[in-house]
Length: 139
Image (cartoon, rainbow, N blue to C red; front, side, top):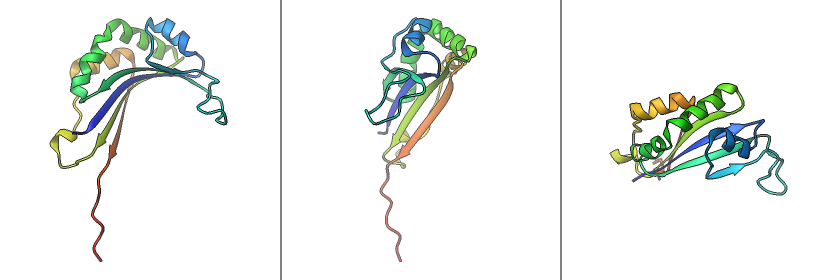
């Protein structure tokens, strides 16, 4: 079966992660601050990132996790996005190991999740990585 990861990402060029948490009334699972570095030799980050993980499973199994974050978080995300101080995005990352397996194709999102995303003014980013050994062409 393919692997899915889903997470909510908030990116800001003006707010630090702590300020984002305060505005949202929620804590992230992961954060990177403006000015921080990936490695000592890396340039300082020009933006902060606030991340909340939904987990690893099929999207329809992860939807209840996101919906459980509640309408208040969606509304706070929407206010933050509308203010122009941050961008909000739901990220779905899919790794396909067997393109012939019907369980590994297709992503369905429920009306409830789409409504939550609309309230949060979040964009949707779907990254798909296909790991497949193709046979070498015959001469």
